[in-house]
Every structure is written in C-alpha cells, then in structure tokens.
Image (cartoon, rainbow, N blue to C red; front, side, top):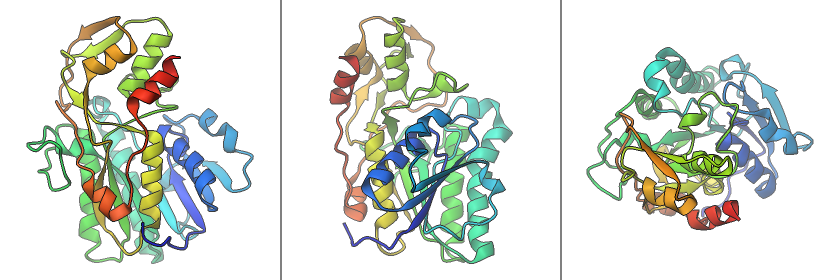
Length: 309
C-alpha cells in the first residue's frame, strides 16, 4: 500500500447501518482519526452504535445528509447512507431516488460550493453489472442496470466521473458484491426481508423456521465479509493521489444460494424468483489488489461455523 495520506477528521454517512457501524468499529480500532457519524435512522439502528458512543473520538448526529451545514471539517467522507434494497426500489421510486441519488449529490454540491474536496469513498454496487457476460467480472464489464436501485448507484458514479472533469473531485467508488456479517439483519428494519441472505437465513435458523430460497436456488453470489468491506474503505481513504475510479470489492469466488442454505439448515422451501436480480455475481478483484493493496481475509464457511456453534 502507498504511504498513508494525512487524515485527521472523517465523516461516515449511514453510520448506524450494517456496513456503516462495522466501518466505525474498524476505524476506531485501526486509526487515530476523529469520526463524525450521521444517520437519519430510517433503516439504521442506534443500538449498533451503543458500544462506541462513549468514545472520545466519535460523535453522532441524527440527521439527513441534506441537513448538513458544511463539509469543510472533513478530510475524508465515507458515503454509505442509502436504501440498499432492489425490490423496494421498484415501488417507492421517489424515496429511493432521494436517498440513493440526491443525498450523494448534495455532498458533491457542498464540495463545489465550499471549494473543499475531501477524499470521497463512495459505496457503489455490483448490481450495476446486471447479468454480466464475463465471469469473473471486472470493472470494464458492460453496465446493465436491471432495477432502479442499480441505476441510482450507477447515476452517482457517472456524476462523479463527469463532474471530476470540471472540478477537482477526489474519489474512489467501491462496488460491493454481497456483504454479510454482524448486524446484517435488523428485525426492526422495514426492509429486512431484502437484507443479506446470509443474515436472513441465520435469523430463520435461530427462530427454527425453514429457510426461504427464491427461485430454484441455483443463482450464485460472491459473499464478502463486512470487516473486509471496512478494510477496503480504509484502504480507499488512505491511497495516494486522486484515483477517481471504481473498484470491485468481493471475495473472488461464488456459492449458490441453495448451497449456502444447506450449510445452515436442511429445512428449506422454494419461493418464487424475484425479477430484476442477477443470476450470478462473481468479482474479479485484481484492481482492488493493485490500486488499494487490499485483499479479503475472512472466509464465509468459517463465519457460518462460528454463528452456528
């Protein structure tokens, strides 16, 4: 990895969510940065932050991004706030546009307005590839957004690309594949039926319910532990220069949903497939290794073993 950039104060949007709260844990343990986290708690849970609220290096504000007065205090902004659910994005259209597109663009507008350009680490999505022609899939794959959520995530990417030709933006887009891990399933989240399938399966197993597999279960996913996602965010924050590019963040291998289910329980049922979801996600992560000096370290099977014993 390149030498660390000078960073003192950072912002995490969506800090009370699954990935945001795990990123907070990682940064408090692996950096000396002062961290401000914001979340409107529409899907995040403040209980995810309770163990860190007493930290002298962390402050929390319950607010929307568009309620921020200034971004000048920050050297890095980790933008994770979103409504990351494919099926609801077909239904609550304006709500998802506001959360997934407009809130991100507010940050960019603030950069231009204040002439202050912190490193922006943007949480993108592998859903923009749709059903890719090439597997494993690298960052040059044709974009094929099959649902509004994917399109909104890609819109932000394109805005960053286009606006960086006029303004001195400094960003890295991380295209997450299928994150899983602690806090992925929030029973109070109204969208929890669309959270990580790993978390859903583990919750149903815990509650002695059959696992529900959409379609025939042959669809394949590249699962990446949230701690590895957090370390990728850290690597993207400290890399030198102005990368202004997107990189895949996945494990680099796949497993079918039926195989995953059988690793957790032999009690399962098949339910109708969901439209707008890919048949396979499989990341080529060479760019992340080369640009960020990052690679995943946590194995899905080991995680499941620890959760089921």
